[in-house]
Image 1 (tube, protein in one colour):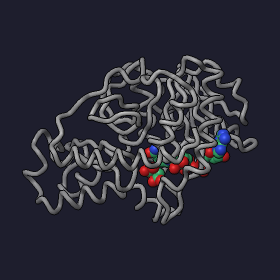
Image 2 (image 1 turned 135 degrees about the vertical axis):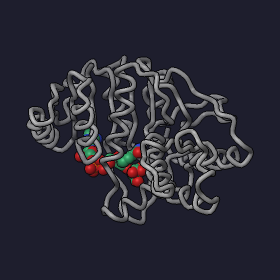
Image 3 (image 1 turned 90 degrees about the vertical axis):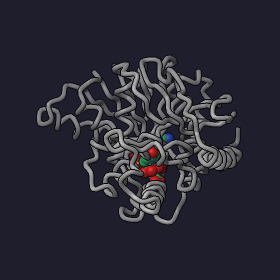
Image 4 (image 1 turned 180 degrees about the vertical axis):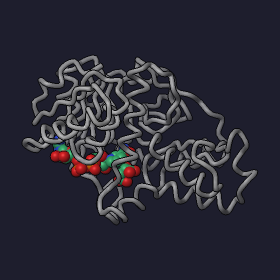
Length: 308
Ligand SMILES: NC(=O)c1ccc[n+]([C@@H]2O[C@H](COP(=O)([O-])OP(=O)(O)OC[C@H]3O[C@@H](n4cnc5c(N)ncnc54)[C@H](O)[C@@H]3O)[C@@H](O)[C@H]2O)c1
Ligand SMILES: O=C(O)C[C@H](O)C(=O)O
């Protein structure tokens, strides 16, 4: 199993590290445009192999796509992150050009690959990857919901005073401060609806904190987060590489599902060796449907800024 990660910055390196530590891939190629940077990160990570007990070979490349040839899975993290006070949507001007070039180069060298798009604004970058590569929809996956759901579970556990392993919950919708749809109605603590333990007001606070999870960390760090994003990507990569058939909310091209068309947005999907093997439809309440429709409107508006 060969995995390429483009962008050896904060998220790309974290993602390569988690993939290696989980020890399911034979090779991870880290590629960056900055001279020597990916080679340096790859060497540093390889020097953790004997300490962390993995056999995955990590290789660095300065923009040489021949090293990525025949990758089973390619992850795109190249692009600029936001600074405090910015929205993810403001990154579109620079990141669209980067994602366009990178996704075309990756598919040229690995025509059978599955692409995972991470660069922001992620739902729009996933849509752009569809337009420029023409890959079938099961082979283009946007990562956002897996991260947002992990943050939702963190906030739920905090509110409940419960261990995170006792908590389950999912966030669908766009990966944006306003667009996320945390499904509080379906969140559980060991199969019991969380509403049995906390008030509606506290649950509403959990929802608001989840939606601004990325912005909160950007305010604290001065740039956006990387550990949880890297771990979330590694979870998707592992589900595909090991054909796990796990459900994650991912950004995928919708063609009528959830009443939406011609956009990529987060919905639950089954991930296995073919990438997205099924889009799972949940019966949403009228309020959740309205929240989802509003989220989709925001994503479509950002898609409208693309020069296609
Ligand atoms: N979808 C998500 O959940 C999620 C989570 C975290 C970050 N992100 C996004 O991921 C992106 C990367 O974030 P980061 O914190 O790793 O940023 P970073 O600046 O640390 O790393 C980005 C790397 O991309 C490289 N790069 C730029 N143009 C390139 C090109 N054409 N080819 C190859 N490499 C190129 C840069 O040299 C840099 O090393 C940002 O757009 C950020 O908003 C998304
Ligand atoms: O918040 C960001 O800009 C980065 C990423 O989308 C995140 O949610 O951490």
